[in-house]
Image 1 (cartoon, rainbow, N blue to C red):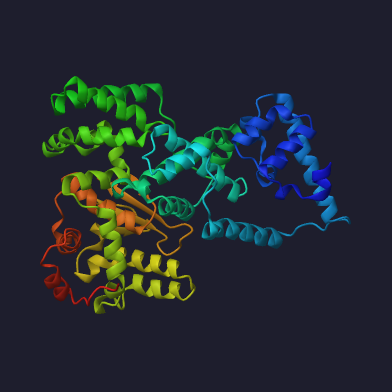
Image 2: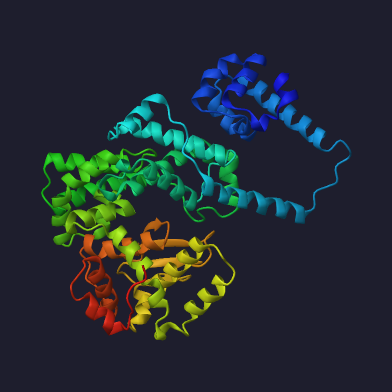
Length: 478
């Protein structure tokens, strides 16, 4: 009992956990615990479902859970030897807020994990990782994030961003074609979804989702519905264009890969490049967009929208939009036409409540997205809908709770249906602009100046200075 006496389980390393398992006659579990890098903190964070995934034998599961339970009880007794007072609702709320803040702040000091030897060699040689090596890196990042989050499987958007940024800053060669950020972030999210899948399918979890309104009104598709969609897809292929067997094979592969939890993004990129010409023929021939999306479902992913845009225009739209928002937000918000705008007034009030520079920058860029059509005196409802129902068929953004970073949501709508949910205002505006080009949609006349202004900046048109003078902008802030 040397570990229980000398050190708290929360501080144990993976090796100490393994030694403890041997001491408790659970030596068979050592290899599995080493693979998953289960430290003391992770051990205490295990729940029934995680133990079932980690440990195969029911007898070992029962013994392990009993040992953890007894340790927690003993630790509680040592901390409060007397009779503990009941926890009030206010105390519970304070604890919840503190725990949430802790989870939100860990990424500020995030450090990449110690990768295994073969991964370190590959990174040192700056070799482009193959699919299996990518999976290994993602698995280690997911395990490390779970450790930092004390067992939680629900990282925030900012935490995903910080981890991927740390990876690409340490190893810039992984940022392939300037789109590596989205590739790695998507893979990391998919990994967490895969790990959560057994938990989310749990009967009790499903009941809780129903109870608290998760996916309210949505039901799983019946076999008849799935079969109908398959028949419809075959009809689309036959009617839209004469497809050869190779293209048909690509489309079937896309549809099968899209429903997988862990996707092979490298192969997706390759096949999307190979089928670019057929997509342009379909879209140019006015094939209904919902039919195009059935054949090429990955066009619903922001990363693939950006990549398609780059293939068509040789322009990285995400980087361009980020530069535009970072450079012009201050000047746009200072425009005389926006001084008394309710959104601008709400922004100024919200900014008084925060001091963090990154948060203030995010709020200003979000406000710029919402207010840009007002600078030109155009119809903002064709550009972005704030906390309301989408009524237009052309591409439009939906934004909920724009200045609350914890619950803010951005979505891109096309033909009054949600095409994709995105993480932030930069991705949202980039996806909106890309969708007009990728899907060959004509710009609404009541939004022409706004979109023309953005396109001029995106494509670095020589007339940019004239446009700036026309709307009264100063030189961009750098």
